[in-house]
Length: 143
Ligand SMILES: [Zn+2]
Image 1 (spheres, rainbow, N blue to C red):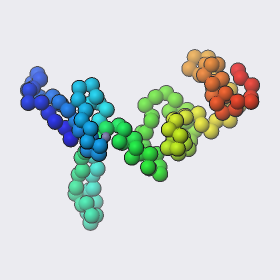
Image 2 (image 1 turned 180 degrees about the vertical axis):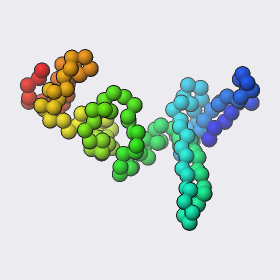
Image 3 (image 1 turned 30 degrees about the vertical axis):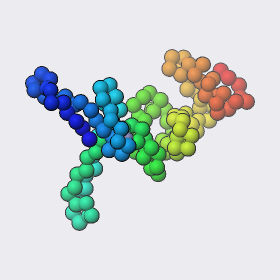
């Protein structure tokens, strides 16, 4: 739920004053408003229980993440805003592991040789690769 200020900024557009998470009821203001997102659900097919309904609600990231943890399948776009996302071999496997451990491990499932092959000296530094080897293959040789 969004609450707009009665004061207006330039062009007389009211600015967002606060946002309340529809699930937990916490109020977010100022810099914390960005931790709340709007969720839309549209039921456009005829003959459904919710025919032609469009639901909109605001939810804080904490509540949304808790709900996503109950999903069987990874949502499209989830955790794809950083470079490591392009190295994930099996998104569903990383997602399933995250639901249990809380750790997002993009290199989960890499064979030892594949980790060695990632070394490029600038993004995948020796230190970075060695940390992955230590985590997944602690008795194997480091770079
Ligand atoms: Zn919440």
